Length: 494
Image: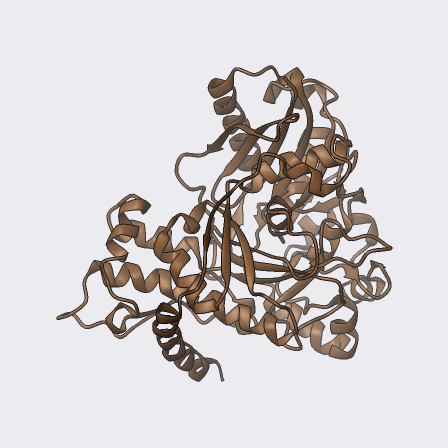
């Protein structure tokens, strides 16, 4: 047998997938830890994780995979990496991590990014960077420079979470053009790293990791890493991408007009565009997609809702640890609109779709004589759907046609209520597929190795599980509830 190994470094868990390179079938998957990985919050609005924890959970997940399949690590032809976006990992010359990673939902650098937007000027920032620097990676690095100067002086290289895992595998500190755009280092007009941004932030370009192709040889597994993971020394790493561009690839979303969605810890709708476009308020963001090239513009426009699965997880804790499947059944017992209960899922840091405001989660309309647990559970799922729809409307204002979306049958898309609510509120057809980010990374590794000539050839074995279409009757009910929810939100943020 010949295998491809996919790794997905999430903020909740680390997942791995073993794919049959010949048939495109998933042989087995594994994840670690069994419970969700914690985020540290030393101060309100902060979010950190220890990169070493990601590596340890990768080792654990790989061991679970071996127990499931008893495969030989020498049979793995190539490795692909997907990872939580926007995190900052800083290492010294010995490749030692200097501090916990400042991860994607951390809000500490918002004011720094907003000041950069003001002083560099919107006339430069938006046409060139397509995004406000906000609380993205470059701004987090500037925060380190200001607030942790002694640690900052020790930095040899900075990287994203997937770059760190790649370094642990290969010993090489590398990144991609897509990764640089994700950190808001990339000048889309010039087609290179933005010298203006680096100069403004007083960041030496030498701290950026070496650029490698998204698909292609990025390094080979060292003897030390091979021993820890049970792989063969010299196994090539041939792909890496942020979780949302990778999720889009996993679902075959590669061309203009196609869109992907996911609802894990965060919720995302990601649409491919062949134009350089931006939202004037930078409420949605544009990055280089995995198949972008000098001759083919492929940008991914991303709307992100921080408070998605994390709200569902919080509700699970409130429910005494009920399984998600039972929570979904209870939620469906309440009527559409949850009899007036409204939940605003903005309790996981500054939200980009709210122009980087940190509104906080809000619960509205609760009546102790009427409402019970099913109402709260439905209101949570509807609140997430309503916030995602709010973001989709921003994308449509930019000219993107978001009418059909593809999703993996995983995370919150396992909930029939969530699928119904999203299709009918946002007015989209949802196509569910039997895949996830780790499987997509494995398929992409095959593209990078050259097993598949074209990205579209990598989707042998992927099947459509279900298609959910909007219903005229249900859409009217959901849109009415959404309208009331949106009116209240706009009153708070206007």
